[in-house]
Length: 177
Image (cartoon, rainbow, N blue to C red; front, side):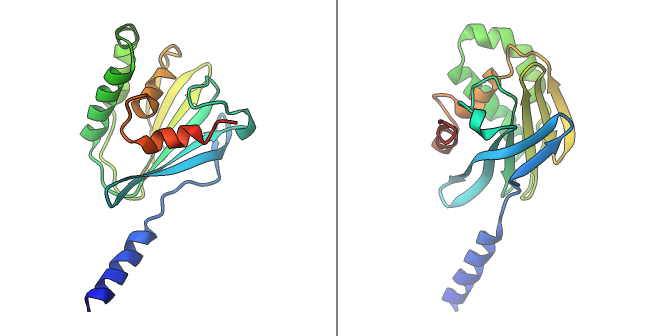
């Protein structure tokens, strides 16, 4: 009986598939999935993360200033305050005090809009080369960060030397030509 329950639970756990389509359309163009990674903690799958570019061959590194999309497709519940706390912590760990001072208002503004998510929800973070960041939750627009001096720096939340998880850096390394 225990084996049957284990097999059933394993099958249910493996059904959790995040929404990382090969192509995503936005009013400013189409984006192609260039790299993806599943982020897990212990035995729990948390989120599938995809990096999209309009042209994958042009991708140099996650910190290049090209237009790109990061999709975070969640496989379980995460509370909004956890996003905010993590963003604040890793920006402080990874950026210089000058960068933090210059970008504190735009960072505070974007960090204040994170909401609770459940399995199947997804955040889209668009970085537009000459416009800044646009954050969406399940295609609902949440925030614009118009400061283009800070938009790439915000990616240090996930891709800095100090990171929430090494799987984010694994993802960034998949973009290298």
